[in-house]
Length: 364
Image (cartoon, rainbow, N blue to C red):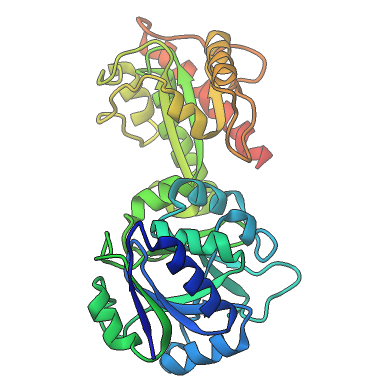
């Protein structure tokens, strides 16, 4: 017999107590999430796990996700490389499932050495997770292969009798499954299911961001951006377009510029001699958000280094777990601004940039 609760502000506390009591007794519950309705129980309850497996027996090759209150519950159980931490900061609570390598102590629910985790954004279920303080196993409340239920009534047709308590919080806001991202211990990223979140946005959020800075973002830093893409890709044995799939995002910006200015003609020619293109480039002013996301910042001159450090200090950064302090690309000296100079001047700057990027790659 399932106790059905239509959630209101007045009965929320009572609903929380009933859900918690059912979970503590090893029973299954039907809960809302922002994506779809889910059914499940405590991950540490043999009774709940057996009931859930019996309810969806064809899920053997698709293990149930551990729903947790926050990253602090993930850390004892799985490896959390910086790429996973970036995704968690960006999308948790929210429609993202992270599949991570199980920690050194192992876990009885590990599947092929991995565990899946999610932090739900739906307020009531998020509060349940915070109150229970142990992971819950939840799966969409539908037969395997059928459309996951956005509406409570659709979920109840599957959960009636199987769930001890069912909570109706209205239609799920998103109405499609969470995105699933596999983050390997070495930082490699795979989007296993695009779901509610865009694949490119997921990869961009997870990536290590490398930024090149100059003044106007029309000569030196855009040349460095396209050259670095080519050289990083060559080292990895991939095409530059595949860098994001390998967790690397390379960008450039100007410390004193306006948006939308094309690259200078000589800069376009200088990199074209290397088989690279700058014709579509448009200048980008340095923004705090870009600097806060950067793991590595390489400056063409000391003035850019000073501005980057001053902005980071004002922001209270660096912010990334693997961030290094900004540094000069050339190491000990400025790479001169070729603006207004000859093509020969641009070639000399290009070659200094190539040498600087070689030094970066030699340290990786």
